[in-house]
Image (cartoon, rainbow, N blue to C red; front, side):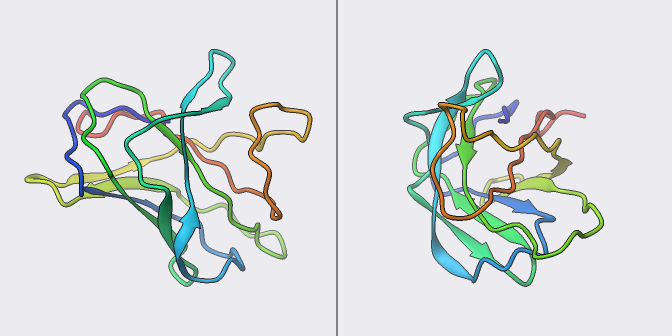
Length: 143
C-alpha cells in the first residue's frame, strides 16, 4: 500500500523495481488487482485507480503500472500482482517505487516487503505461481 502527498493524474506510471530473479516471462498484460488495505493489513479487492494489467520486465525485475484514473493526496492505495519466485534463493534486493509521467517525477522510495498470504487467508488472490508481495510504507514526495 502507499499514499502520496500530491495527487497523481491518470496516465502517470508507477514503477516497482528490485524484483529480479523471477522466471515470469516478459508481458504487457500481467494481471493487476486493485484494492485497499484491511484493518488487519490484508488485501481487500475492489475499485482503485490502476488499470487491469501491468507491464512486467523479467531482465530488470521491474513492474510498470499505469494509472487509469486520478488519485487523491493522502489516500492509501493498494494493488496486487503475482510473479513466480526465483528458482533458488537469492540475496535480498532493494525494492523501490517511483512515479513518472508527472510535471515533477517522484523519486524512488524504498518499499517494505510484507509476508506472503497463507492459503487459508480469505484475502489471498488465487494464482498458479508463488507471489512476491510488497508494500510501501513511505509516502512519495515526503522525506
